[in-house]
Image (cartoon, rainbow, N blue to C red; front, side, top):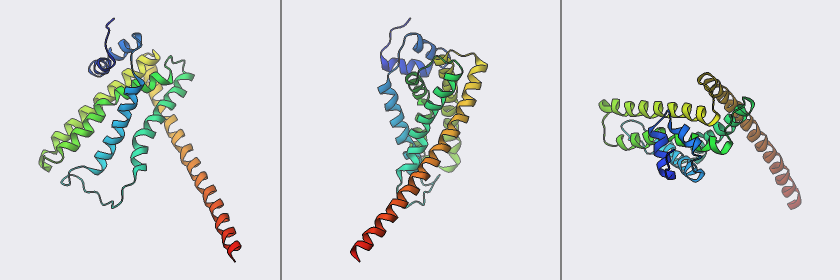
Length: 209
């Protein structure tokens, strides 16, 4: 079995979609620090894609910057995937730990993140008629990451092809449930905050009067 540094393991996993994660698993490679760094880059890539895109392709009418949507589209979405996959695959006798799911999934996102940065860069130099080049990069990046995600889940849990497909479908369902519950929780917290804020305002007014 090969002996690689953590950076080399990242490259090996991304460049060898079908055996890279298997090698990573048996060698017990993978770095949680690098995984967190990739997620941070994903967060900034989401912001760049939403705010720094070339004006000839996309014009934003938002006058104020709100970080919450970009946080949800990147960090929260990734965390939901990790938790959802761990919960589902625990029931399906998966062998992967939450740490490994996080590491492997983060590595699999690299092509998708790269195409976000490349598209933002090219959007300032290409014209509308050349948008096909950006679309090609998007398709390659997204397709590559999809293949890596599939390979990562298959390797980390030691599933067959069919069971991997089932696990991914159930993970997406679990993500929707988790996000729905998070929305309900945030709504409840907001209502409780408004309730106590109203009481505080009323008491303050009566004390002054």
